[in-house]
Image (cartoon, rainbow, N blue to C red; front, side, top):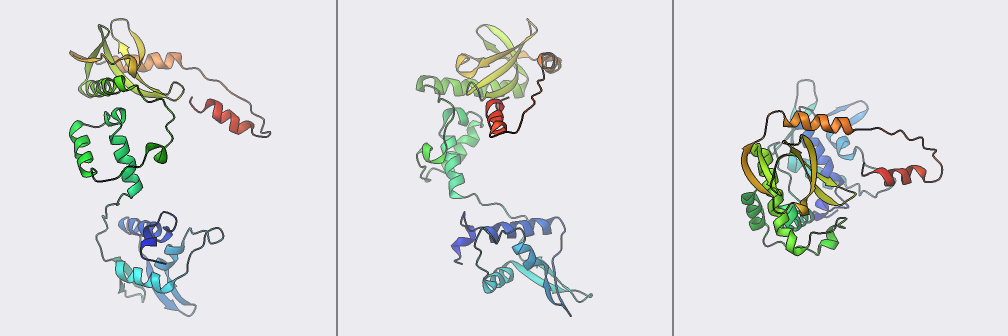
Length: 266
């Protein structure tokens, strides 16, 4: 096993096992080693192999390599009961290092105007600056986009509208759309329409309202505060519209799979 394979996406069993061990130690779990008439017992080495499927995946049983890892990361202290207890050589609060593919995902999202609107401007600029040297593959190589991207002339206004909506919700202020003062209540993503929906409460009419994001590009913030009872009234309106349906499915052929495909968006 090479040193780089420890972090490889297809050969990372040891890496994941070490993370589990360190997190267990942080929670107070102890791993011991001792010798008795039955032989040598090593709980740490057993934990390294725990959960590995030897039948479907090849794992090079390299005892010397594992010894080097254990010697590098842990120290062993003898106890009065004759057992030795493992202790980590490094601090337990270890940050998780992101992989290159994860950073590629992040930068691709930062370059999407709608997704970027979900972050504060200062954080968005800071992340882009940190990742400016990262080469991003074509989006099709990272994910398959299921929704239709906003037209170029709507992408930036829609991003501004989304940011304004979220800021107004956090500040408990109303928004103005088509001359109406509305209270922001929810942000939804409709899998059927493949679009963001802005859920608002029309205080004057006393009714809930759903606006597609691309239809609310002229959204503006207002100084009028949101009444304290809006959330309760909005939740009550949703509860009054809620209905239930019970299906009886016979498990023949692929009926169950087709049922989930038909109704997963609900």
